[in-house]
Amino acid sequence: MGVLLAACGGRQVTPLGPDEQAERDALVEDIRAADTQELVNAFDLLSRSEYTRYIRTEQYDEEDFLIAYTEHIAEVRVVDGEREVFVQQADSGGTFDYGFFRRFQSENVATTDPVNLVPFVLPDEPVYLDARNMDRYAFRELADTLLWDRQAQVVEARARPDVADGLNVRRARHYVDRGTNTLVAMYLERVDLALLFREESSFYVDVTLLPGGAGAVPNNTRFESRIRTPFRGAYRVRTVSTYTDVRPVNGGARVPDRDGP
Image: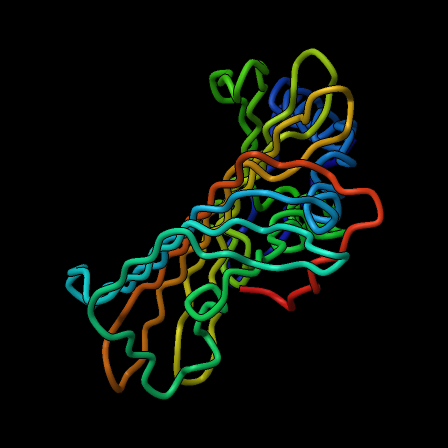
């Protein structure tokens, strides 16, 4: 069978050998075969639960010095059918400065509502699984890791620097429970370019199972964004959250959905 070379930005995609092709196809199948429902449904279950959330948001300047932070521990409870947030502990320092780009302000700076990161890490049609782009990514299996007591296979798709120019997703890691073939965590890096700025973002979310088969809820989430502009250099915002003591409430008040970080 003849071999075709696909052009990309003036460069050619080197075709994989038979063994490399077979290994790549096997890893792609591992990604596609993983059950995503725990991750997809985790924030919905959280929205119908009481829980404790630790959240810290930080901003760094172009030299990576910390210039501002906020930190909260909040209890989310349902009282008389209404959802209420009780801030148990709070601390802050410095002043957040977003310049001309306030739209990039993480909602987490001003609110304790959770942000559902799943649509960011797990889009309906990942670009690296698109047949037209698959050869522009390098797939590999990393060492297994433990997430709580779950041994997870780690499969990474990474944009090839020589042929993947113009593809926003630069790296994605799928963490798949070896015992249940369930996707239990995702990490994704992306780059977005516009006329006057460059945004480099990373997202991470993992889930944990509740006792008694009640389902899975978020355990840790991370969001980080570095903005580069010609007017004021670069700055970076990072938000980290941890959810504990999660208890689903039948008929409880639902946390309003958020548009994103």
